[in-house]
Image (cartoon, rainbow, N blue to C red; front, top):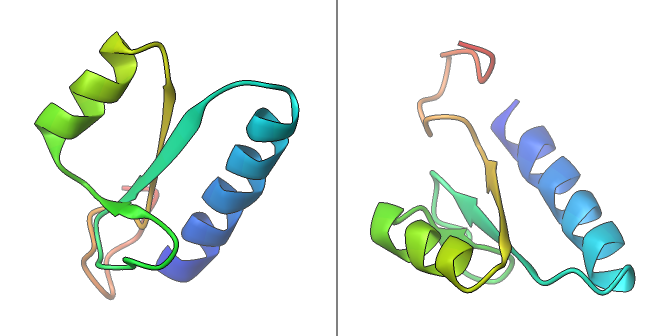
Amino acid sequence: GMLGTVMNCLALQDFLEKEGIDSRVQTAITMGQVAEPYIPLRAVRHLEKGRVVIFGAGMGMPYFSTDT
């Protein structure tokens, strides 16, 4: 579910960082220790700075598929 997608995001971020690619993870649910909250303007700013932005946790709505 949502936690699984965040775990995958963190794994992808780790891979990218090891390859020298600056990246950020943003999530729809609060996970301050491991990811930024999803804030559209912040995501755009990261992109403007050349960073890869990885989104996790779907829409942050329990019992609603992250695939939807």
